Image (cartoon, rainbow, N blue to C red; front, side, top):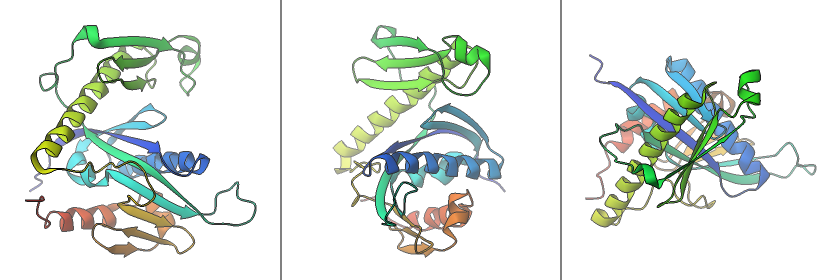
Length: 241
C-alpha cells in the first residue's frame, strides 16, 4: 500500500561560493530536480529563475533530505586553462503550508509589479504580470512570474511567502530546542551534504558516506537510487536526542 499522500513543496536554489560558476551550478541543480520530478510524473511549475513548485505523491517525504549545500567540482566552460573549479549552491526544500498555519498581516506586505523577462508570450512580456512581494518585518522577498495573469502570480507569491515564513519559524524553534544547526547552511565550500565530481564521474553523499557513479545521468534527473538510499539510511539516524 502506498503510504504517501499528495504533497507540495518549493525547491529554491541559490548560488554560494564560486562566483559565476556557482550561478550556473544553482541553475543546473534546479533543472536536475525539475527533470527528476518530470520522471516521477509530478506536476512542476516554475515560480521564478531560482524556484520551482512540485506537487505529487510523497514529494516532501522523498525530497526533504535534499536541503543543504551541494558542491560541484568541474572545469567551467569559461575556463581556458583547463583548471578544475570548486563551487557551491544551496538548496532549500520548503513544504507548502495552509493559510491557517501562518497568519500574515496585510500591512506587513509591500507589493511590486513588473514585466516578466521569461517565456510566455506577448502578454507576459508587455504587461506587468510578474510580482515581487516584500515582508517588511523580516525583509523576506519572494517573486512569481510564471503565470500570464497578475492575480495568479499574487496568489503564488503569497503561498510561497507563507511557506518560507513557516520554514523560518520551524528552524528557529529547532535551534531553541536542541541547538539545531540549519540544514541549508551558509554555502561555504566546507559545508556540504553532497559533492558532484565531474572529472572523476562520481557523486558523493557525505551524510551516508556513499559514492555513486554515472554522474551525468544523475544530474539529468535520474536521482532515484541516491534519494532512496539517503532517505532509508537517514531514517536510522537518531534526531539528535
